Amino acid sequence: MHLPRAFAETDLARLDALIAAHPFITLVTPGDGLPVADHVPVLYRREGDRVELRGHVARANPLARGQGGAALAIVHGPHAYVSPAWYPDKEAAARVPTWNYVVAHLAGMLTLSEDEASLAAIVDELSRTHEARVGSDWRYEHERADHRDQLRGITGFRLVAERVALKFKLNQNHPDANRRSVAAALQAQDDAGANAVAALMAQTLAARENS
Image 1 (cartoon, rainbow, N blue to C red):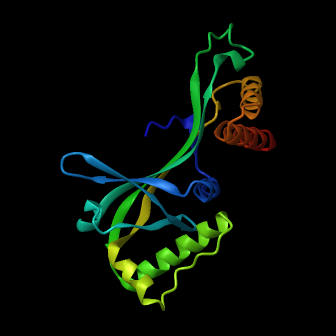
Image 2 (cartoon, one colour; image 1 turned 135 degrees about the vertical axis):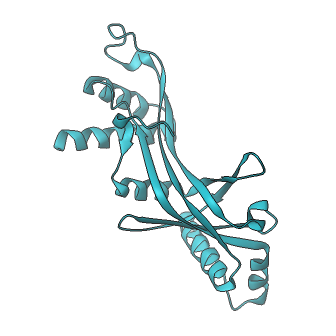
Image 3 (tube, rainbow, N blue to C red; image 1 turned 120 degrees about the vertical axis):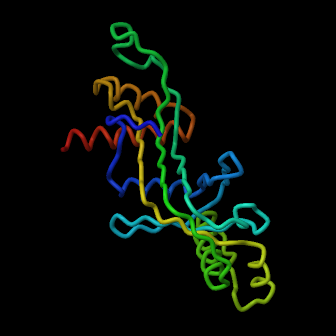
């Protein structure tokens, strides 16, 4: 990923918040001559600088029939189009359109598992997390044979990140007046993604001003 210094983020607390809000990732692995992308929800854990993702795929997925190995997890955050009309210096600086967005790349070694206890823990934690998000109460019940039988259809994975790249492209290469104007314009949009980008821009501006 191209990562200009102005957009590079090193605070892993922002990765925590990003994955909490966007836990459905793209998992890229080597294929037969071409990369293969799978789209999966993940469980995230960080202890200091150690970042770990866990999840599962269908056992019929070619990924499950491999040996693991090098992989890249892409976490997609909010994004929004930015009109040059929103910049106070649009004429003087001949501004052009752009796109503001947040994304994280986590590269590391992927390991696979068909261990029943590990799979049960992944399914249980995923369901508890996301059932709570939607206000429902379905639970994986390991004592039920029919629930345990379902585990035979999946393979678990774990990715421990060896490299983390966080890109917060939020007009940091612009004067503050432009950044404030863009944030206000995005906040006024009837779009959740644009509103989320606006909030991140406001946080980034406040952090710089308070540093």
